[in-house]
Length: 323
Image 1 (cartoon, helix red, strand yellow):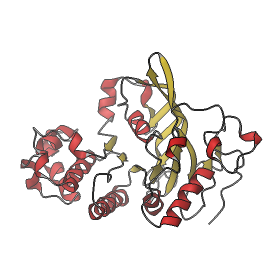
Image 2: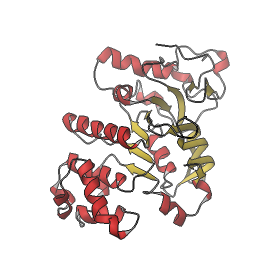
Image 3: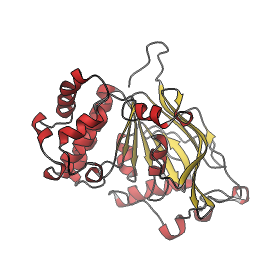
Image 4: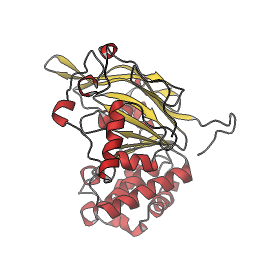
């Protein structure tokens, strides 16, 4: 991991402070994200894990300000390299999006226009002087393991893995300090998944961006993450360091136990029909499912930080148990 030369401490590239997001539905506000707080440092792989519907993608879209019109950021701050992007206009945001922060989506075919060549996609992604464009495009393709000649082909002529490599090249071309990878391997086979994961990790080690990796696969997150955030019903219920701390939150422990019992890829969700509820309740969000609950849990539980980097949303927390 890269250290800042002045302080010798890793710089916080991305900071989320007290972020809450609502969906407006028939003049009714439905909570989607609740009081989200975390930071991702230079060179870090922060893995955000949660089941479908937990709010992971809504968080990613909030960070790059591409939420659907029916969604509204109620309050909070999103800092990119120290600048609160919620306080700037869309024109200024377009200069940040793609240049300072990039996103890799889970289904590349949905984001690559079939009417344009790969070269056109890469040129449209480029921010900077025209004189450097051809060279930087070629370098970006080379870095993701693609030949420069691929610029003349169309997206449908590529495999799913090649399409995702193109998306990664587009994310890299402007050398952003922050990269969000939103379930980038969901549509890929096992072998291609491993290749894409290895590529992203190599990019992190070489260029030291702050990388936010979003996944439903806790087993994968435990393997590649420097820290892991666990999401449940619009809340981050725990942040811990894999290999250093054991997760404390009852939900985290259930997920980890699922991996240990099945020894296979995690399918997140213990009892999906009971878990999913769009309304953020007035008690602990995991209250109904928790085997460790007590009377004091019948209230909104704040996130309890153990330090500036790890913590848990549980009234019985204490410090995370060391491995």
